[in-house]
Amino acid sequence: MKKYKRVLLKIGGESFGKEDGKGISLFSYAGMAKQIAEIKKNNDADLCVVVGGGNIFRGREVGEEDFDKVAADYMGMLSTIINGLGLEEALKSLEVPARLMSSIQMNKVCESYSKKKATHHLNKGRVVIFAGGTGNPFFTTDSLAVLRACEVDCDLILKATNVDGVYDKDPKKHLDAKLYENLTFEEALEKKLNVMDLTAFALCLEKKKPIIVFNIENIKDISKALRGERFGTLIN
Image 1 (cartoon, rainbow, N blue to C red):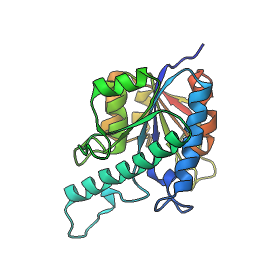
Image 2: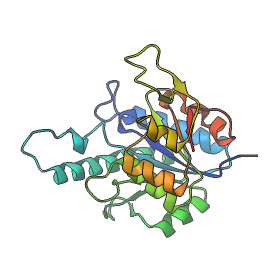
Image 3: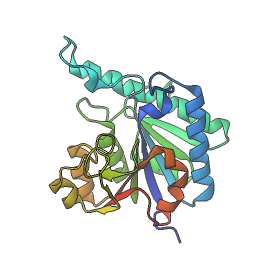
């Protein structure tokens, strides 16, 4: 018996880049699509995906330059749509039904997001890809992931990172860093652990949406999480 029936997978833009995580790699879209196809094949669960755009542009990369932060955020949102298109086409090439939905209207490119349409696609067994951020500046793709998970009633949010889960300190700088298997929302806040941005995290807490943080290299093992087995760090 599966523990989770509808899940949202958050994937950073770097996963779609070249070896250095920058730019666009058609090979990376194809590789990620194969992993998602396997998840759909092996699990009786609805799946939606939120893609980042950091391989192309991040709004927060603008520092002290004389450049409008709102414009920068919209550039970042458009970057996520490029990745969404790449992933959608890669999934379709594997005969996996997929729909890209954007928070920013661009009807010649993809569908505009609505809860009704997204729920319909999920009920039909399609992978739904959410892009375009929240459609507003100053919000991250973490916020988009949690917002959409709440709107389409996901049971679980899976956040892919480049480490094995949530640690008490940066494992890339500290060899003695401790990996947490389970955390409560309160513990994560008290320990000031960097799970996701605070706006997104607060919404997860309010709506009681569990989060699993895991290493993107272990995406093939997501089935464990859907069965309720130990996988990455579970926050609930």
